[in-house]
Length: 356
Image 1 (cartoon, rainbow, N blue to C red):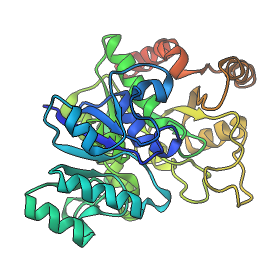
Image 2: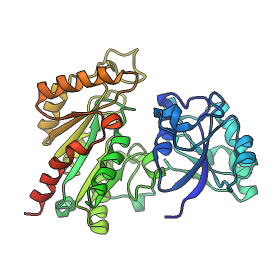
Image 3: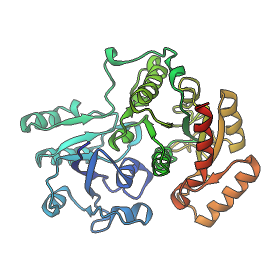
Image 4: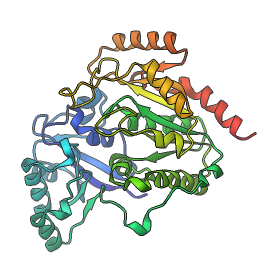
């Protein structure tokens, strides 16, 4: 896949969880070559330093014009790198998108609010021969799949990377797991279920929250089955969305029931007590013990806990990890700080058992 040069706009949210699309692209993408981040709060800095104190040679610019003047490379795309509440395009972001189009940049948009349906923006794009890629636009009916049972043909292990809430780091952990297994010499693949996974270049998947409910199970099955048929992987990791008990959008059962994932990696933030952006509502994250039990009732074993350490000192996170290991008798790991190699023996066991 040849990478196209792109900048990412974050509108001042680069250092917040609202910029999780940008964060994923900063950590790595096989689809785009990210040559700059546009964030007026952090110009002159390295985007990696802001994200997790790891330099990645991706500069932050105050404006789109600054990026175009400074970059030695021709830039083709402007990617919207934030997830707004309700997926809408606010006026400030609308203005930046308009500016990007007027500077002859095509747009990649992962929000529910389609840029192609904003008449003013669509007209500019058409006049200038530019692309508008609304990643979340639903598939046409003829391209959708019902669940058929063909998932039984997939013989390799399928691992669901679930979480106890949204914005928990499930996609990042999924990508790290794939990279870790490939480094160990295995053919590992990721099933993307969100817009950022597509932007990062994953070949197989679908956009979960843009799929008609009747087809979610079938699209999940078809993505996994297609991946198995075309790539012949040793192991498949499926990116999770939301959580089993999130009132605003419960998800997770399809990964276990429809995709027959018999093993789960569960991502959790020890310090998060209520669901993201729902502090007004009396719903609280369950204990890990209860969530592991619920996953077991659905038919899968939780084989490890991965910890989101945002807003935590590393030592505090390690103490939580130790307590979870003692309580649940499974590994609890800090992916960003320690990597995921400790899980390799468990995956190798699953792969070997699948070949018997």
